[in-house]
Image 1: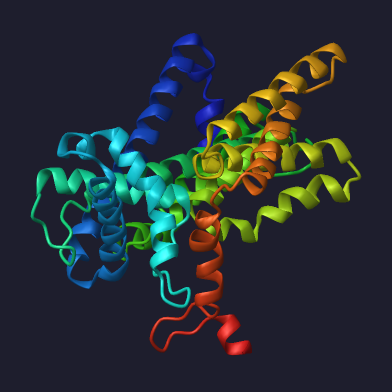
Image 2: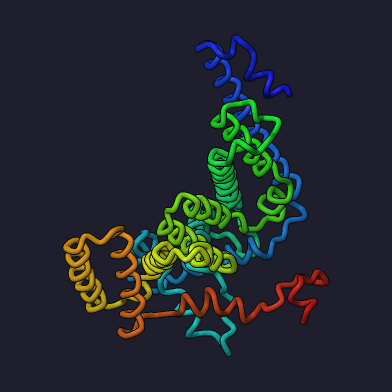
Length: 371
């Protein structure tokens, strides 16, 4: 009732009233945002003594291993400390771990982008505290800030999702906000949903109290859903692939975005999802798959053949088809020309085979109970 009255007051129907209304909404959003930030800071400070240190230590350890690998394969200290040397160490770590493992006990189970984030974090810490011990990582705040950014992006995605869905809903649906214009109603519902997500206790505790990195994939999933609702299926596949390269758990829901158009018998959108997924995955893992000049020449040849063909025949969504074709070619050439799939074996398959039940201490989940 208060919201309806706010929008129905006569003064708010004037231009000055519209300005006042926008200022009030901006102040409300700023208050909710700052309250969420302050709650996260308080949670972070209040839970230092009960944090689950294993994931922090493990992330710092493997990030430091990238830095060490860069020093091992670099000719001098200056090269090792450069970003070029850093990325050489990053690309070499999966193969080193796989080759040195005893009976496929790799220890490392990070997907490529997650390992990259941890490596950059460890490099930062090592630059500030060169002699820091692996067991006592410093400066965890950068990871918590990444969590905060991902939570903020998730809230924005939920706002856009709800606003889009309510905006195209039928006027036949009755609600307390029905007397408002549909655009205002959609924005208010989106703001309410985003506020609930931004202040959601379990997400805050998981990201800043425990802390874990599960929230990293949430923006990818939500924006993928938004892209699907707007029939941007190629970008939907790209977002799902990017999220999966951060944390492989997103692959559990990835088939949903394929079955969505498939069950509607929309074959082209289904292919676009797959093309986007393959193109993005190939882009991220291409440094491991394309290790020789011949491989890159082959990719250039595929591009040179595909692009004129698509342009000559004026194929709709030619960019998506070209990206997908190149992505498929990257994987095929990687198989035929000696590319490394250590990122797949170590980053994805190992974790699935090594931790089939996903339990900690006496707290079991459903698969372990069913077993």
